[in-house]
Image 1 (cartoon, one colour):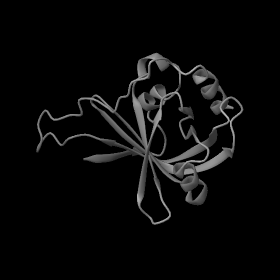
Image 2: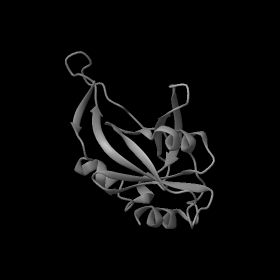
Image 3: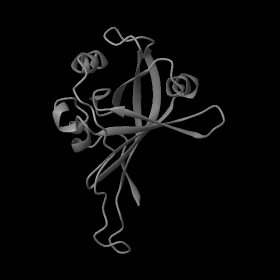
Image 4: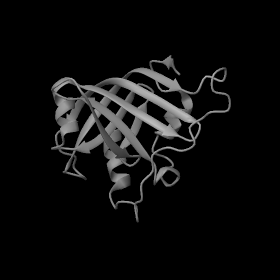
Length: 158
């Protein structure tokens, strides 16, 4: 069951998204969800090399410039970011604004800022589901870190 933890990133989540430990999250995915033109959820997957917490209330994202996800954000700005990993599930809700149509170091990406409005933490209710927890997050295989990964994070922070 999810519970509200506030209107800014808690310390552990901010540290996870600070971009300081890319190696630890190299094969972990971040799920995001926008709202399409028909009012339906539209999921997408990003990496930790494309998402960084500027501070507790702002999360920057590099998203393919011509994607449905970017177009949804340009249209209505609604965004939920799902951070799911072993024994951890956070939902970050807020409004996104496009900061740059084209990133300098990755021109195929647009730069967005998510203004955090609500953070929820989710976990099983021990009374009804004792010892139940998330075992793993969504992972993917990437043979090597993209050459511009650090540059993307640096550009997102500016």
